[in-house]
Length: 359
Image: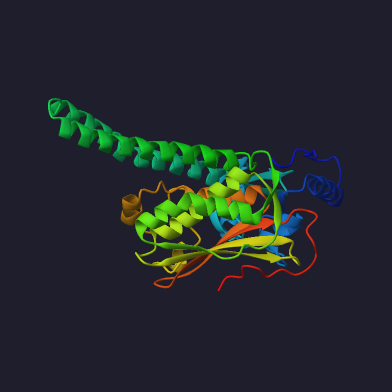
């Protein structure tokens, strides 16, 4: 429990005992409230004052009041895991209450929001991996059976072997995506950093995507890159940019144009690489979720395109691992602009640079 400096009865008068309890609670910190039986607040820690007590002299939060009343009625140490909506950023908490000297109720709150969220993300990840693996694994079994049935038909064997190769490639993509995501997400780090020009990084990514764009009938245009240097894991950044470009190509209609541009902001010490398409766009309510693992705005379309649902998650964590960020500006039916922002290398020149400003 929060308070272990219990004062025995008769050891001092009420004021001295209260002063001692408050001094102990002040040293402990955290989220703590000391209440009378009628919920009058005798002490509130800084966190409790911000989130529950505010400027009130009486506690009114129903969840905390209920646990305090239970301690008064049972004279017991009460522990209640709760989901609350009244404590600001704290939503999943453990509330504890017990009586101190039979005179006051001590209420403590332990935040478990991040822990619960991490557990839920882990459960979702396992469920999503199982879901993503089910289709290709089932396909392998069906194709294997088909191969056996047409063992004496060279044309059939060739056809089904080709389909088997496609399924194997999809499984390889999924495995590679999971490994790439784990590299940046689990420990927030990337590989060895080297000094690279933005122009080289963008050019490498464009080269990787050019054949996909040609096959899809989408024009991939590279505007003059900004003159900038960055200290990055070049392979991780090129892969992230490749994912953004592939995503833009897949969601663009035949004959559309995808533009890749970059812009330096010396005031902020950053360079932004923009991938601009005129595709189907993203609904406002989905824009905060598209960087989640396996999240797809159009699941059926994504499966036809062959995506794993990990590309934008890899982009996000690669940007964060380099001290940067990624954002999207999109309207349904009008296309999207994804901006991948990185810190400039430490000795960039201080003059303004607007090369490659997106239009």
